[in-house]
Amino acid sequence: EDSLMGTKATNRSRFTISGVGCCLLDYIYGQVDFGTDAFAKYRSQVDGDGGLSPGKLTFGEEFAQFAGRDADLAVKEITAGKPVDAVNVGGPAVVALIHAAQILDPERFAVRFVGAVGADDEGVVLRQQLARTPLSPDGLITTSGRTPRTEVLSDPGYDHGRGERAFLNTIGAAGSLTEADLSDDFFDADLIVFGGTALVPQIHDSLDRLLARARQNKAFTVVNTVYDFRNQRRNPDARWPLGSSDESYRLIDLLIADLEEAERLSGCTSLDAAMDFFIQKGVGAVIVTNGSRDVALKIGSARFEPCTRQTIPVSQAIVAELAAHPERKGDTTGCGDNFAGGVIADVARQVEAGNARIDLTEAIAWGTVSGGLACFQFGGVLYEEFPGQKRAMMATYLESAA
Image 1 (cartoon, rainbow, N blue to C red):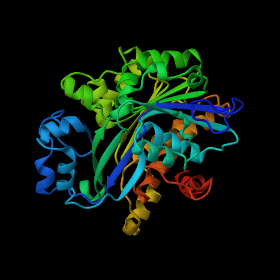
Image 2 (image 1 turned 30 degrees about the vertical axis):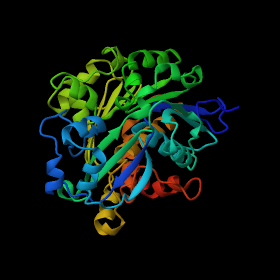
Image 3 (image 1 turned 30 degrees about the horizontal axis):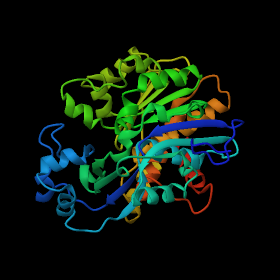
């Protein structure tokens, strides 16, 4: 029988991926101009002050204090009263895992997720939306507080047309999720993902213990990060913690972060120095993204195909297609999460195949195609019209990336 893990007819004869993180509803406003006076009024002046900032996440309570008014009213002012363009499942862990489940063969791979929702109407909507994906909503635990949500303010013209978003997050029920909610079933997996755990603070603060438990079960461990507004606000000049000690790092097989997150976690001010920091701390391999720019990779473990630090471009076929057909452009919400999902899926595929060493350049190719495809839609999740649709969409682009 299925457990609270959220499997759909899962049994351990398949390669199993477990993940934990924030599962929320994204309310996406797709045509916001960060250059307006209305946005400038609520824009952050100093990191961690509670204001909005392109590419970063702000918590709703801190934003309301910064704005001096109700957050919903401020959003209405910023969006000039426009209706929301899309309501979608969001969250760095769940979006990555939905994508992985969509592109992996369900006969060979089981993907499971644990998150928290509130006992409210939004929780019902979130379960209904998750039920439209290969991930079962059974992994959602109902706790106190409202269902987590994020207002996504997207400016498609920002950064010379590359696009960017500002996020206004209400943690809600995700703040109640703890390591006690992760059962033995969760750790009975081949690959375990801790995704954007800064949005589930009690899980985040327990990462060293949770990673140790995953390693004891001989699982491959992946951590993909998100902007840690809580610790940035708490101590703007300090390195962001990952768990209760740096012991977490040597227990991570693969770390995926964007450039700013990598620099804040390491306390370094350059890409090279940040990547060196993680490898010296014992991370098996680190992948650093930088929006639509090249992806950086550094290997520290013999578990991976060796390479000196490499930079790998995003999918040029997708860049060209978006340039030729701007009318097909959605927004950049979920690009990074889908990138992580593509990497995770290919790593799982290589581990399941028994590869002596994992080729992360290949996994990154899967990631860049996955992230690029998200640009054709609003929100991070594509609700497939038929099983295998996402795999079919990726195939052409993967051939051109090879």
